[in-house]
Length: 387
Image (cartoon, one colour):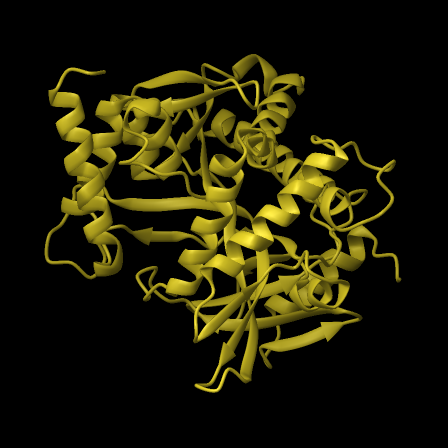
């Protein structure tokens, strides 16, 4: 395998962003361009099923599997805290908050486990927007590097845990028996998800399926020559992560630095400040889906990713960051199975977040009903005075 230097990587990204053709390659790595689209495209229900199944297996099947996901949160907090520059500001000017469905599930605890369910882990790194611009930018740059390093290192750990045989290279967060049990439980959960039309297959089933589901990690950045065009560039490693190679496996990373939009776009209502401006870092997990005809014969196969871990770093002008810093409140919750303290918004902040999603910002029809149900239930729980 060719060894890429930082210069090789940077030159490939530059070539991709200035390409007139909109696609190309260097060795095993490819790039392609596509038009910027609104975030309210229709969701693929199969992807939703896969994401829910992965989360249910991790959080509910065996609570000690939770380390597979929550280990990332622990690693990120540790890296930010131990860094000589960012460390003194963690917990005051830098806060890592878990949001979304997992936050609602944690904040309502076991008392309402039938109303709220775990999903992919959604983390937001919030830097105090009231800091001077120059200092905010310095912290932001340092945090971006540490998040990229954590993402890269965590993917490497997952690769060695689940797909590579040389376990001595990277420490595992689970013992071999637990890893084996998780593979079986997840594969069985996908079999239960299958129906007459689709068969869902885990990449743990065979080396052939693992290889089919494998994908290179990538960067999403803006084209330098075409307006409203995004370029997806596959990379062997990220900037300042040159010693952490991104292997081609079913676990793959993406780093999107193109997100800048109005959260009210396309709607008749307006908001004084609805700016969405953040970088998004993700680890996703590919699976195989087989489509069958009425006779049970396979007529099409494709790989579809389950969402696994999302990390966003809000820019200084992001409306959600400003609102969180001015109004939001957080609480720490201990997960005894993963032995990790987790920071989540309190129940009032969760209610406010859902209210804005439903009544202030644009909301796709496919998500509106579920969000309304969660909002109504959180309001009901809060009015009961339980929390």
